[in-house]
Each structure stands twice: as C-alpha cells, then as structure tokens.
Length: 125
Image (tube, rainbow, N blue to C red; front, side):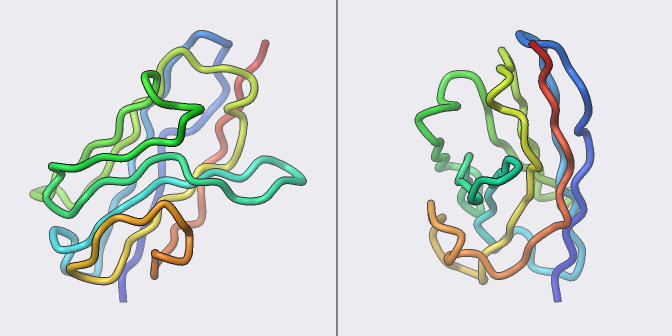
C-alpha cells in the first residue's frame, strides 16, 4: 500500500509562485509514474502534469505548460510541482497520484492507483 501526502499549498496573489510536494511511503516509489491532478469547486478533476518513474519524461496540460514544472527525487521518495506565474484559474485542490509499478505515465486519472488527500491552492486576482 502506498501513502501519499501533499504539502505546500496556500494563498498567493496572481503572478506569484508556489511549490507543492508529494511525499510517498509504502515502497517502490522509484518504479512508479507519478502525476498531479487538480479539481476546482463544482468541476471535474483534471490532469496537470505527469512524470516517468526515472524522471526522464514529463507531460503537461496545455493550460500549465511553460508555467509549471514537475520533478521528483527518488532518493527522498518525493515529487514536486513548481508553479510559477499563477493565475486565478489555477485555484483548485491539487492531488498527487501514483501508478502501478513499471507503467508509463498516463494523462488520465484511470492510470493511477494511489491518491493523496490533496492540498488547496488559492490564487487571488
């Protein structure tokens, strides 16, 4: 069983930055593709970014490409999401997700087996 705990959310003004972290426990982190998803109030959960188990490949939603950067430190069992140039429309609960071992990153939530509880990001205008 994999446990995921997000941190780093908060309130920031438009144009500001935040760095989210996702700490994993339960084993095999370095063999799992990881991803960030977000869900705004009253809206469905949407893909934000994904990273392969070794970190060589990354994928982004069009809406965040060029502003957000996903990364991971397998020695620390932690994944990150650096968010720059934040916009009010980035306001959402951000959740990290882990895939089954040795699978490629997916842009769909169906591709992930484990989920964190989420961290709130609020961007004021």
